[in-house]
Amino acid sequence: MVHGDTDAASRRTRRREASRGDASPRRRRKTRPRVTVVGVLGELLITAGVLILLFLFWQLWLNDIIVRNEQNGIAHERSQEWLLNPPTAPDPVETDDGTEVYEPIIREPAADTEIFGVMHIPRFGSDYAADVAGGVTRPGTLDPIGLGHYLNTQSAGEPGNFALAGHRTTYGKPLNQIAELRVGDAIVLQTEDGWYTYRFRTLEYVTPQAVDVLNPIPQSDSADVTDRFITLTACSPMFSAAERIVAYGTFESFTPTAVGPPASLTENLED
Image 1 (cartoon, rainbow, N blue to C red):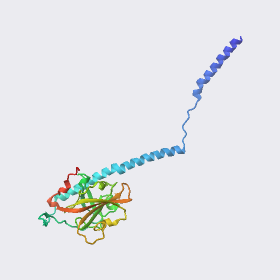
Image 2: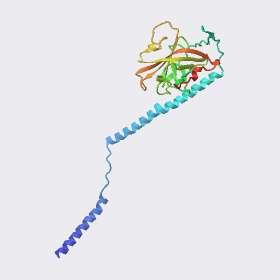
Image 3: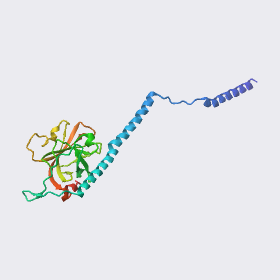
């Protein structure tokens, strides 16, 4: 009798335990993750970081490609328009060795923001072209147009220093490849009158205060100016304005529009 009662009690105990075991999962509540200020701030920072990276990708790479292509296209159209109705070519002059050359046509410096030329630099690519305007202010010339002429320097082809400035990054970055220039590379300014071909000579890095690079003879106070120079300036290093990278060149020749494009525009740059 005692044995039977014990068995019955054991069965009842097992049933109660089984019943509690079946019911336990149904009564258990799901735990929700705690929302904390640190967690929310972390997610916001991650989102902000992604947005900043996307903006930099757009501003420093994709947008620059689009702007550079647009500037190339506009400058090439201007270049072709000047070829349609060329002014009469001046008479050539004979040098001491019997060679005939054309004296460069000298114009007054263009007014601030006035576009007067198109720059061609074969080393930068066969499709490279950049408008050149008077002045070097960012909102007036450098950002919307391309290259700017320091108004206190000489005109193209004039004895002295024809000095220009341009961006190395952003806004189409017309001087992005300035550090890749090699000795002898052509730097050709086209105007309605013709092409002014200069030859690259050397690169230099200076502080922003080194304004003597804009002197008629760069970095010289001499008043005896007979040679013709070109100076290109841009910020350095990349994405910084701590220094200036300066490229110097010397004048080689002038080719009137009516005569046709100079050979310097189509040089072989495979080396």
